[in-house]
Amino acid sequence: MLWFWDCPGQKQKCQKPDVNNALGVKYHMGLKTKIIFNTVIQIFGRLFTAATTYLVALLLVRSYGVFGFGEFVKITTFVSYFYIISDFGANAIVVKKMTDEKNSEEKFLGNLLSMRILGSIALMFIAISLLLFLPQGNSQGFTKTARFGILLCSFTIISQSLITTANAYFQKTMRYDKSIVAVVCGYLLTISLAYIFSFARVSISVVSLAYVFGGFFTAAISFLLIRQKILPLFDIGIWKNIFISSLPLGLMLTLNVVYFKADSFILTLTRPTQEVGIYGLAYKFFEMSLTLPTFFMNSLYPVFLEKRQNEGRGFLKILKKSGLILLLASLVATLVFIVFAPTLINFTSGDKQVDFAGAISALRILSLSLPFFFVSSFLMWFLIANNKQKILPALYAVSMVFNVVLNLVFIPTHGYLAAATITVVSEAVVMLLLIIPCWKYQTYDN
Image (cartoon, rainbow, N blue to C red; front, side):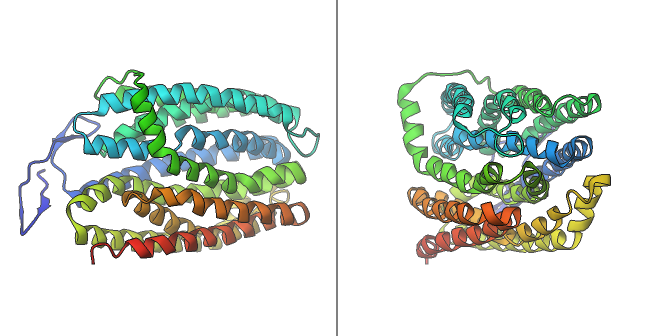
């Protein structure tokens, strides 16, 4: 099938490079079709990974109960802090540089790969070293089981950095179908190993190895699907350029993940492990929906860059449409969670429904923040496309301090319900802080 690009004045055939699908079929794809295709394929992938994540949670909840699942949440939450730090926002910068400089994929991706490998290894050792300073207990804090699980799971910091690097290429070429193929393969291995470990009733810490092997398998498939051969390069000048350019966005993402995960961390330190498990189960469902705006904006970001360079009003038009789509999607997701929260939680917990009953209220409260999350993601990428990422660290620093202070005050006495409520309030603050600069810069082409 032949697709047409929108050209000034009339619809005509425009010379655009071939896009090859996962089966090797060549076709020309229009702009709108590319956005829809990449968004839909990512949603499909997310539905698959969400189903897999849910099955893993179901296995662990029913096999290990509220305490064991709470331990697993501690392990994965702690290690996930370092995923964002290893990313550090470099993908957005590298994609922009590859867009500006033609045929530069091998140069930029090779240097990004070497930076990520060395950086993730360093972060893995930092994560393990921090365990020496974290409080240890039997019913709260980081137990021996949680510490051993963190030790094993820390290897996923390396695999995650490799996957993120490959995704820079897929984002630049708008080939998220290849990324999803790799993710599906990795998650199939993860769920298979999780089932084997749960059936064998090994320690919950050992279950972390399912994610370790699954992550490295995903990374291997990702690099096999990249057409160019990407090898680590060591150009210090490019390293410096990528780091300095991504510093504002990297700091913003780091601050963002601190406030985003602060509630679970403070719950771990101040409340029983059972509450960590209750909140963790509610959050599993909640965070599944948070990737929708990320996937949508990943598909839209290269288009933002192109429209921003060539078409002022075209950029503003696509901006308004995409914002409206995300807002409507968030309202639908909120309604679904409010209505079906009891069904989701009770089915997952099975004969342990009483232990996880509190997760229903937590999920309903968390769902109220979805419109704020979706709109904030959109506003953040709008600022990045307009080269205004330097203001993001300050905005997220304010929101982080606000969030952490509220969590420190209310979680020790009110537990997971306070954590859920503070998530809603904090994301509303983030959205308001982002609206101010966006409102100022959106008038550039009027």
